[in-house]
Length: 341
Image 1: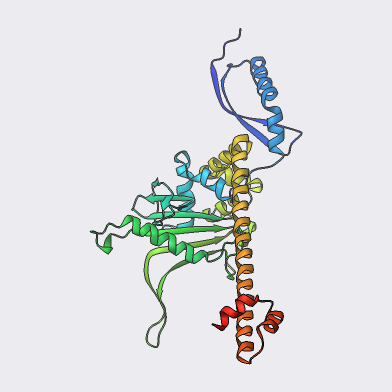
Image 2: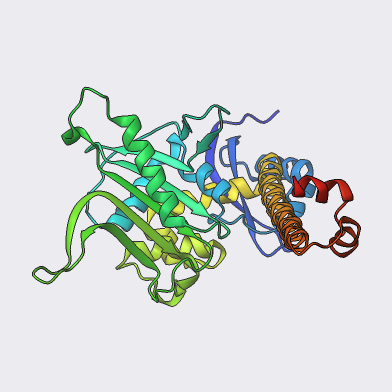
């Protein structure tokens, strides 16, 4: 039997039946023995070939999905990529060297025990708290939601005995897969400001709380350049399948993120979890829409009933009989007599 003694970290398997490629990690491949290496490849292809064909035809998952984004950047092994992304957005304010990922689960102080889950929450080396959210569909009041999240995080971080000077800086970054604002540019930063008055112009009052809204549809892929790391990341988030090789080869963090995305896209269990997440989100929205419709219909019905009662009272004041009023308003005789008391 041939002995395997060399490790090949990665190989590219060209698949003519699909418009992509698969990267496999191989270990214990025989040194300088093409025959054994070919047998090893055949075993992998025979074992996983049908799985590869099935999933690669679906293409890469979207990194701009909240589920994919959180599982890609919100894990310890990919903190380097997250730091690179954050520095590209913040442009040195602050310059992040390291981060600590936090538990994104925050309990609301409500009797029903409901909780809110953030996509990614981290604290930087200068103690700034960063909250990153990805919005796939419009929910409305995004800025208000961001302010609410920040208020809750600030409350959680500040003890009753501490002074307000101890409040941490909080940065919220919201990626949207739709046009959230009517503004033309794709990236917007919001801070607390003093409005202009008769003596003073508008001025920043505090940068303790900063909110970034990044509207992905407004980013033009043609603007991407290695001279602007932010644009490189936007290209990756918007269309990873078309990202230029130059970006991937010269930016290790982007290469790392792309390789992880390939692994996720080929993982049948992850795809199943992704589909379950999407279904649960669609079901939630459907329930909310139905509840809103039912609530509106109930409100209209209550309004019509109230109008009938007002009409009945006016007719009673004019001396019309209860029987006639019942026929006109479709109220029961008992309801009308109750109004007359």
